Every structure is written in structure tokens, then in C-alpha cells.
Amino acid sequence: MKQRVLLTGGAGYIGSHTYVALIEAGYDVLILDNFSNAARDVPTRLAEITGQSAAVVEADILDRASLDRVFADNKIDAVIHFAAFKSVAESVKKPLVYMQNNVVGLVNLMQSMDQADVRRLVFSSSATVYGNAADVPTPETASLGYGNPYGHSKLVCEQIIEQTIASDPRWSVGVLRYFNPVGAHPSGIIGEDPSGIPDNLMPYVAKVAAGQLPVLSVFGDDYPTPDGTGVRDYIHVVDLAKGHVNSLSALERDGQGHVVNLGTGRGYSVFELIATYARASNRDIPYKIAPRRDGDAASSYADPSLAKTVLGFEAEFDLFDMCRTSWVWMQTAAERAE
View 1: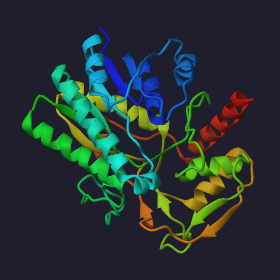
View 2: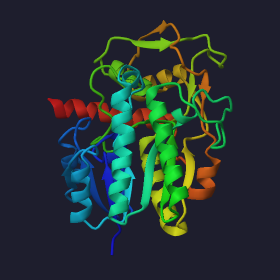
View 3: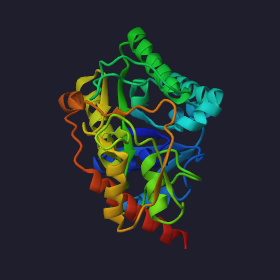
View 4: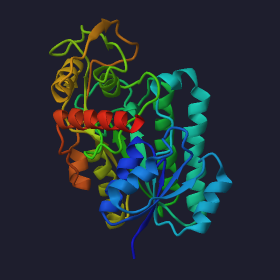
């Protein structure tokens, strides 16, 4: 009997790639999404990749009654929780909205799970819970903090999970702290599709390469790094998706939770990413130097050794793979729009 996994936010960027990885690993998957930040044709595109129709429930994690119905109507064995708002810049403008959606949404979900006697959960967290980490590469034992409401919401969620586990050992939860997910499925059928001006670097670079935006702003070139630009740990979204499958397998195998970083363990500078994307796309990427942004660290990348030990996880794709698949996705998306 296949294990059935509920994927909240499963039509989004990371959720859709994880859906494919779960299907390939032999799981039965039910997507729950309100489509506030996902295209409505994503389920159709997922069927194109997997060769089977995607099961989808349109619902909102803030609607507790809808969540209860999903668990009442379906035999769910485990949940992977992606459904959250994720823009740092937007969170600064709308802190209450972020706390409501990300924190109250998690509480609603865990209450519904508990009521349905489902207590296996993989939680999508973030390296933002390290604040401006002094330790680089950053291990899971680094001190926690936050520099914005988005990071605060993820940290509060982690604390809620920790306190719930302490109160009831029947829960087993995998907390995955992502660094910077980028790239796209090699088919070019799914990928990251932010509306407007992207908050994150690679989608911005991609839109400049495609001619959708005129110039890239590089925020600071005077950091204490090899070329003066900020250094970050970018992880291919397909690797990240596999990390969720590994996390779920570990929960099934061990019956106990884990908190791990998902990253590559090496940092790439802004200039390195621009040069690599230019090579992958064979396009010029014009940029201008802008002032540093408040709260940006000079360097941030993961110590991923615990994920290798606990989950058997190791990232396979390099920066060129990330840029190449992103560019394939940009070209495919443009063709679909025509």
C-alpha cells in the first residue's frame, strides 16, 4: 500500500518539484493549495512530467474547517508543509499578514493533523532563522535569530514544533532549513515564476537575461569577500525536492525527528552567478552597482554535513546546472505564453 502524503502549497515552486520527486519515489500525493502564489495550470504540467493526473484540493490553511474535511475525506499518512508566504521585503511591509498566514496556518494544520491521528510532518523552514549568522559555514547548532518578519515567522513555527514534540512524543517532524533554492526541473515544464520584480537574485538575473527587465541591481560591491559582492549558498530545487523525500523516509525509518540544513556547503558570489548565468544563457546581463541593503550579510552558506549523516542527503547539481535549467524554464515559459 502506497503511503499517502498531503502536500500543502504543493502547486508552488518548491512544492511542485517535490511532488515530482515523491511520485518518482513511489508515494501517492495529494496537493492542497489556494493558488494565491501558483499558476492554475501547474497540476496539468505536473501530469505532463509524471504521466499521471495530479490530485488537488483547493483550500486555504487558514480555513480550519476545510483542513478538517481534507483529513476526514482522505487517508493521509504524512504531511509536507510548504504553504507559507516567503518574501522578505513583503514581510517587512506586512508583518501581521506573515504571522497570520505562516504561524496560524501551521497551528491550524497541526491541530487538524492531531485530530486525524496524523503526526508525521516535514516542515519547510529557512536559513533566515540564523539571523546574521556569525558562523560560516553555518551548522544547525548556530545561534538562532531573525532580521525580518519572514524569518521571525519561521523561527516561531520551529519553536511551536519543538514545544509540540516535547509535549507529545508521538509526533515525528523533519525541519528543513533551506538556503537559496534556484533552478528548475530539467524538462522546463515547471520552475520559479515570481510576478513583478523578483526579490531573489537568480529570478531577477533570469528576467534580465530574457529581456523582461532592463538591468540588474547589485547591492554592494565592497563586502569583505573575494570579489566584494555578497556570497550565498544556492541549491538546485531538484536537489532540494529530493531532500524532502529523504526527510520523509528518515521519519518513517527512525520514528524520530531531525533539524537539518539543506544546502551545498559552498558559497557563490553575485558576480559568479551573473557570469555563470551569462554563460548558460549565452546572453549579456547588464548590471549596475547599488548601495548595500540593510541586513544583508557578506557571506552565508550551509554546513550540510548533518543532512548527509541523518538523511543521506548530498546536493548533486552545481551552479551551471542551476543556471542552465533556469534558462530552459525561462524559454519554455515564454513559448507557453505565446
